[in-house]
Image (cartoon, rainbow, N blue to C red; front, side, top):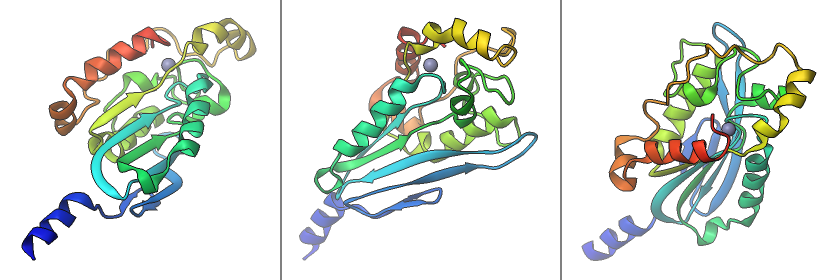
Length: 211
Ligand SMILES: [Zn+2]
């Protein structure tokens, strides 16, 4: 029955593997993306795949680009608890803490390892410093797969800057760090589906933490 075969192909989707994580249709799976050591130390990026039973668009939710902005990180953990993969059409990719070095040291905007702002080094490069390798890993594994992407920030950075600067003086990079906007956040597929995602994303950032 060709028509039945065609209908199933349009509705069902197969398993998805990203890094060490595999989620079959109707499953939620969590694990890590490894960022290998290079010119400096490596790190890991905790992720979750929520794979719906039926085929549909892929939404990526990214928290922790700026590790001191904890509200999106907590919010994303709550979102994971609320989602039911068995009732979902499409897939949700969650990056729980994009910038683990910054999260662990509570640095404002800049990495404690290379002094760079992860939000300004996309699409990244695997032969660069750790922030650039994080960006390259997220670009390759998450962004290029996504039809839609929300990069979540919060206003906590500015509120805690003076406290953090006193506490961790010297960990913040000089302002000479390049602040050009990311050149490519959305894949061509994403741009076709969602319009100019990169400009939307920059707009969202500027209304929250501003970096
Ligand atoms: Zn931010």
